[in-house]
Amino acid sequence: MKTAQTWRFSMKEMQNLPAPRHRGQLKKPTWIIVLVSLVSLFLICAYIYPRHNSAACYVFSSNGCKGFSHWLPPAPAREFTDDEIASRVVIRDILSTPPLESKNPKIAFLFLTPGALPFEKLWDKFLHGHEGRFSVYVHASKDKPVHFSRYFVNREIRSDKVVWGKISMVDAERRLLANALKDPDNQHFVLLSDSCIPLHDFDYVYNYLMHTNISFVDCFEDPGPHGSGRYSDHMLPEVEKINFRKGAQWFTMKRQHAIIIMADSLYYTKFRDYCKPGMDGRNCYSDEHYLPTFFYMLDSSGIANWSVTHVDWSEGKWHPKSYSAKDITYELLKNITSIDESVHVTSDEKKEIQVRPCIWNGMQRPCYLFARKFLPEALDNLMQLFSNYTAI
Ligand SMILES: *[C@@H]1O[C@H](CO)[C@@H](O)[C@H](O)[C@H]1NC(C)=O
Ligand SMILES: *[C@@H]1O[C@H](CO)[C@@H](O)[C@H](O)[C@H]1NC(C)=O
Ligand SMILES: *[C@@H]1O[C@H](CO)[C@@H](O)[C@H](O)[C@H]1NC(C)=O
Ligand SMILES: *[C@@H]1O[C@H](CO)[C@@H](O)[C@H](O)[C@H]1NC(C)=O
Image 1 (cartoon, rainbow, N blue to C red):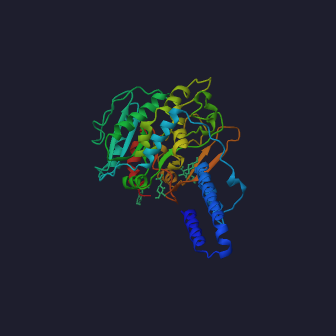
Image 2 (cartoon, protein in one colour; image 1 turned 45 degrees about the vertical axis):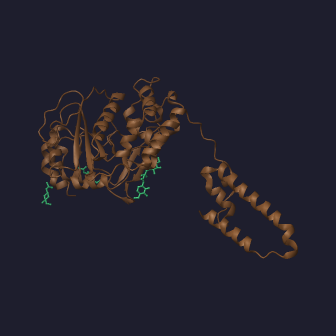
């Protein structure tokens, strides 16, 4: 815009310029040639450097010359495959089309469980009084749970076997999303396990998730054996090692993101076939890598890079800390709800600790809305404390 205006202005000035009579007739054609050449040069530049429009602007802008680097063509990007081009246009279109406005936007809570839901009573307490602003879906992969809460009765979707660390875990997540997407009022989707509890009251959670346009998908770069060490070259060319990311599976996501997962078969297939236990003599777990890598590659600014589900890995064991009944104190829950920085630790020798503030709509806010892993015996203490700790 600025360039075009500047240019038009100069043309006008030139036309109005009173040319000295004795030079006028001789010089006029020369001026036209120069003009036409400049315009052509500009158009050619704009054509050659479509993504670097700024470079063309610098031709005419007096304050824009920041160095020679602007004149260099961008490093040649890898040529995308047909599948990749097709995938990317579909995804870009979905992301740039806002979802249909719902008069009654709801959050879909997606429970991924082998069977029983020991904290159903706590969730009932959390959901009570907020009818019409949420929906519940349960994927019970082994046993059909017995329900205590009316919000959970008949909310099971058709399920299939889930093997820990295998693609069947991702399949179950996709199945939950697909079922929840059938209801156009569902605008944000939360994946939870049987050992998850809510850390805040419903309104807090609803506002936190609905009043932002990002998804809380965990994503970080781990150059160690439990990160990029799990990558297989078989994923080339579409998934390069430099783009391989890691993150906990417990996401929340906006509708557009749930839809691009439905639309994706290219990247999903790469992970299904080449990120699995025993791949190239290593163990790769798709549920920890597919979504972080997918979103990093296709909409990295659309995700928060941390999970709103807290878990305590500080004991440094193979499994995170499990909270028992005696661990449940007001102090513990206050500690967890007041955390406002996300922490990632790499698995290489350096054990680099990456600490980032949790930024929500530009403000630093508490990171967590949910927490795991709680043992079933913790239920009674949590029920007693719920009103107290959610009021924090
Ligand atoms: C999210 O909203 C902010 C303003 O609230 C806007 O600047 C930003 O572009 C939006 N991002 C996406 C991915 O829609
Ligand atoms: C998440 O990380 C990516 C880089 O990996 C960054 O571009 C993006 O802005 C981050 N998201 C937010 C919300 O800060
Ligand atoms: C809560 O945090 C404080 C300060 O970090 C710590 O000293 C205390 O042990 C924590 N309490 C619990 C129950 O985790
Ligand atoms: C719960 O909150 C009330 C009022 O703030 C307080 O008096 C009470 O001690 C709290 N209970 C516990 C177990 O922290």
